[in-house]
Image 1: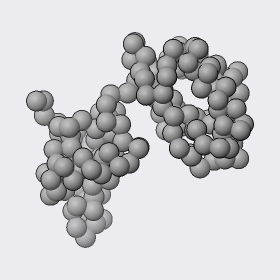
Image 2 (image 1 turned 180 degrees about the horizontal axis):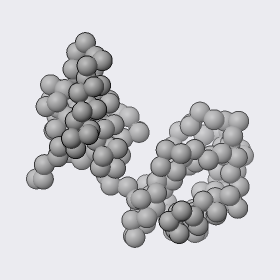
Image 3 (image 1 turned 30 degrees about the vertical axis):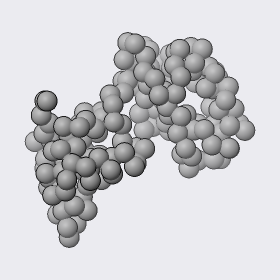
Length: 161
């Protein structure tokens, strides 16, 4: 089993975050978020590392990491497309965007392209119903999407923009 540790920069961030909390275990979410920012996902090894940092068992860290959908528990593609699947987005065209992603990238929700470039996920409400339909692409939100706007976003990703 490989090991995990924070970069020196992330260790400094962790120490700063930890100083804000009266109990170290309250820093579990920021600790996990630092892992994900550093690695792109939260591995079992990283969960063991975080458990030691926040003085909890690895199972307690696993329980938290699996509860929150914001944590990726397996590697994702370079570009993570998260399509909102709730009512407002569906009524405004998310179903057509999902079909476009399937037809263009060959991906169903939960899949990553063979080249590792794209991961496609369907997610619950992203809190911007007035901008429906929408996606988050690597945590950057794109709203009022049409097939043409999504096509441009995917083209830019494929061309490194």
